[in-house]
Structures are given as C-alpha cells and as structure tokens.
Amino acid sequence: MKTLRMTCMLLITAVLLLGCATTRTIKNASLPGNETEKEMLIEPFESVGVSQTGAMKRGDITVIQGVFPDILFGEYYPGRIRWNAWIVSEEDGREFFGQSIFSGIDYSGHFLETIIIDGKVTRAKVVILSTLANYVYDLAGNEISIDRKKFLLNEDDYRQKIVLKKGTPIGDMKKASGFHEMLKQWNRYQTPNGILLSPLGEEEIRLIAGINPQYSFSEKLVGSGRFSISMDPIATAVGIGIDIFRASNGSVPSTGWDYNSQLPSRRNMALIIQYVSKMKQGLIDNINNVNMMKLVTEKR
Image 1: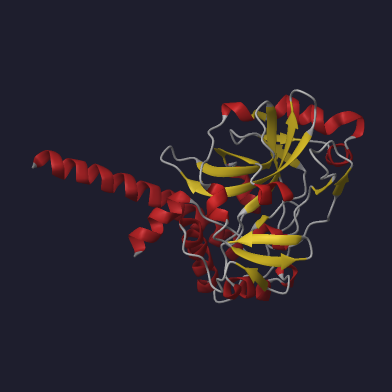
Image 2: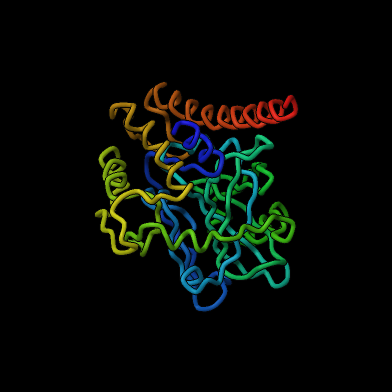
C-alpha cells in the first residue's frame, strides 16, 4: 500500500495554502467568445479544485504540461492543486484564461504542472501567476518579477507585452491527453464563483474548512454521485497530503497563503519540507526498484 501511494505521488499531488486573496476581475479583456470577465486572482477555496468554465463544459480546451517552479513551494501546502495562468495569442493579442494544476514529479527530478487553457490555441504564449500576481513564471519554471498594478490593469498593454516577451510558446510544449475525461469523474461543488471540480470529498473539504474558514463554500456537493474522495491517481495523491495534515493533529494554524504571508511557526515550514522530500524520495525509491529488477533479471 505504501509503495502504491508513493507511486501515485509521482503522477500528481495536491497541496493547500492557508489565507486569502483579493479578487481582481478582468473585464472586457480580449477573451474569446462572449466570456468577457475573468477572475485573474484565485480565491482560497478555488485552490482545491478546477473552476468549470464554459469552454471546459464544451470540451473546448487545450491541455499542456510544463515544469512547476520550485520557488512556488513558498505558496504550497497539503491540499492545494491550482494556480491561475494567463495566455496571449501571438497572432492577434487575444487573451485566454488558464488553470495550472500541480502534477507531482517526473523521472527527470522536475516537478510538473498541467495547464488547462480555455480554447483551442496553438500560436500563443503562456505564463503562470503567483497567488497575488506579484510574479509570473514560464513553463521552464523561471520566475519573472512584474509590476503588479500594471499587469492587473493592463496599462499600455503591459500584460500582453509581458506574456508575449517572457511566456512560453504553447506549441513547444507536450500536450496532455485524457485530462478532460478525468475531470468528469471528480466531485462537483457549488461555490459563490460557480462549479468547482475537485478530487476531494466532503469529509476532506470539511477538514480543510475547519482549519481555515476562508476555504469554506458550504461544502455543497451537486454532482458526480461521490460523497468521498475520488479514486483516480490524482485523488490518491491528494489523500497523501490530507494524511500529513491529519498527522499534525490540527496544530497548523492559518495566517495567509501567498508570498507576503508569514509562516506562523517552524512547524508549517517543516510540513512543507516533509511533503516535498516525500515526493523526491518516492522518485528515488522507484528508480532504485526498477534498477534492482533489471539487475535481478540480468543475473537470471
């Protein structure tokens, strides 16, 4: 069982940040279709799932993979799976909304992210946003400092210029298949901002909300027929993070979730280090097991 859980950790995991973010609605951006408003900044409760956008319901999405920035572990905690992304077309400057899902670790030793983009896009560039949009990241994991006010308000097309200059070309990245079908198996929760798809069950949502009420959205399950954590590999990895949370015996207070927040104790820092170390060690253990099996086979 332990081996299974660690193997799942290599596929994807999820983490929870503690605190809140101020909402910034981007109105009348050059978004495709009639979707002219997007919340560029992520609310605390949204970090445990994927917002079901109109494009997602239509299956009109592009899904790619990139390198998760190591420095974003500063905004990382057991339970969180999501950051927001922003995309700009190289052809006409149109903007697209995206969601970045933390996706575990691969055999290169890099942590991965899966980016779900609203719309079928090819000639465009993408960046990942830190929680409060103080920084953006390309898909190689590099951090770029930005002028937050200019980026959010798009003064003098600042946002498009940053994304097109510093972002990663979508066409250069590996496409991820089957993600849309997997999302259909996740639990559906009604939130103040619409439907949230999450691998977490009601018990896990209540646990998270009990630690920080800002994560509560009434825990109203409205679809998928599951009232507990889902059983796909992503959900199994989420369960590992929840187990670490439970093992802390509720001794982890909440005082924020972004780079501007302060850790309330060294205990919080220790749990983050423990989680990251488990993923790294899981990779090493799996590589060692594969090499051992090869050696045994060769000796036979």
